[in-house]
Image (cartoon, rainbow, N blue to C red):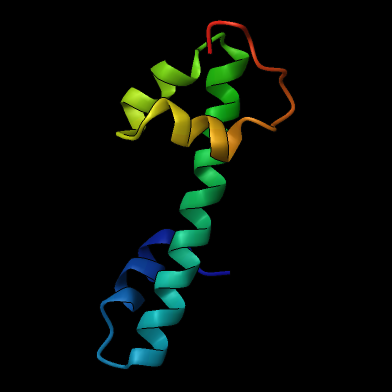
Length: 77
């Protein structure tokens, strides 16, 4: 797997096949990192609302995407 710098460079390639593969890989990496950091925030007691503020999305969007993670939901979420 390529590193982030290589993927960023490939994403701007003039070859659409290279560029699109890199965009897909970056999207998958971003999704994995988001899941990791949402779990980290939840482990630190953050609510879905607090996480949503930092991600720039609604609380409902965070809960829908990450609500079934390993931590049970709290009432105030």
